[in-house]
Amino acid sequence: MNKTLLYTLIAALTVVLSSCDKYLDIKPVGKVIPTTAEDFRALVTQAYSYVPSDRGLASFRSDEVSLDPSMSEYDIESYFDIWAWKDNGANANTATFSWRSFYHVLFIANYVIESEAAMTGGSNAEIRQMVGEAYMLRAYMHFVLANLHAPAYTKCDPATTKAVPLKLSSDVETLLGRSMLGDIYKSVTDDIDTAETYLNVDSWETGYNYRFNKLSVDALRSRVYLYMGKWDESLAAAKRVLAVNDNLADMTSELPNVYTSVENIVALEDVLTNNYARAMRVNSDFLGMYGNDDLRRDAYYDTSSSSGARVRKGGSNTYSCTLRVGEIILNAAESAWNAHEYGEAADYLLQLQSARYTPAGYAAKESYVRGLSPEALLAEIYDERGRELAFEGHRWFDLRRTTMPRIERKFGNEVHVLEQGDSRYTIPIPTAAIQANPMLTQ
Image 1 (tube, one colour):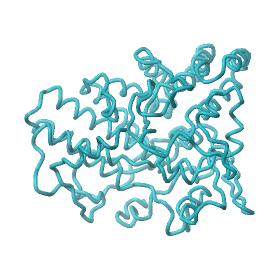
Image 2 (spheres, helix red, strand yellow):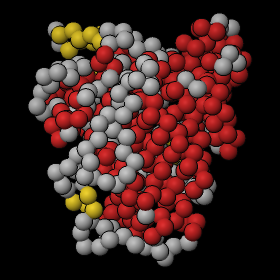
Image 3 (cartoon, one colour):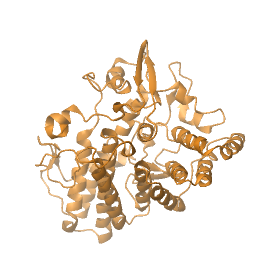
Image 4 (cartoon, rainbow, N blue to C red):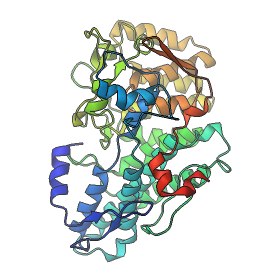
């Protein structure tokens, strides 16, 4: 996202949202009540600016990341307990997940949705587009919250597994308990379906492409249905996206997760913030997944540091990325495999790999992939997903929803282990949120 533009728009915002002590910690008060389409566009812009970078923070828990004892005391205090999966008794200075910000965005999204008929001064198309964006924001915030703070959909009974509160109105007076995971996902898919009937902008010009557009509907659908294990639906949505945009970045000239990339569909989240990028080092085993003929090894990482490889894919708002083509191709490959369309799965995998390896490396990869058994092909799809989407906020979620593997890591002489299927694959709801709303413990 072009944050300079975004902050300029926020500075012009005529609506003031101030804190209260209720569960959502927000309610509308202030000098001006929004009435015009221009007012509501400023409000939606503010909602976009509050979308957290928590997928990046969760990356510290994944097998991508190493921490080094030589790092600053500030970074150790901020990230070590997250990296070591130490959720009980964490250091008081440990970075916290942005529960309040998610619900701040949800409040604004709900308020915009509820105010559709009251907006004045804009065309019907402009108003419907904004309301469609609000539905997409509501869907996406619930989706990310559930994947941070509830078990993976495919690893539990969604009908009986409690997740996070489902917030579908702008009321801030009522404390909400945790909704069932199945209800969260039904709301997410319903909101995406509704958004599809509202959104009318095919694409936004660069600088405004943090906003949801028509293509983002199927892009997000493909991810949500993938996480639900609804393979036919995920594959169909991915195919519709790729029929419009199947461009892959030229690795010799640009990274695929920059907001100006040809792969961009929505450039909303600044996933790997400067603070995260500064503290992270690339786990050596994870780095070993890249061969010398993989163009991403040098493009994604700086291996010259004596303290370990550093990530090039983040550290500034240039690397704003929420939905892009590379992910959609991998969604299609995994969904096709699970639909028992192994040849189609290999075709999608090779479509991505053809743009990520040297010519000689791709020739070898093509021969290798075509000769794989179905089981080995799925493993290659998982590995390629790790290589391609590294440090974009996907890896922790992918580990949760697939194999939930055992991870062992060292920090000096200390050894930390996350066992296979460990309950710590679900991040606890923040203590501050529970203190504000004891119903979250139920």
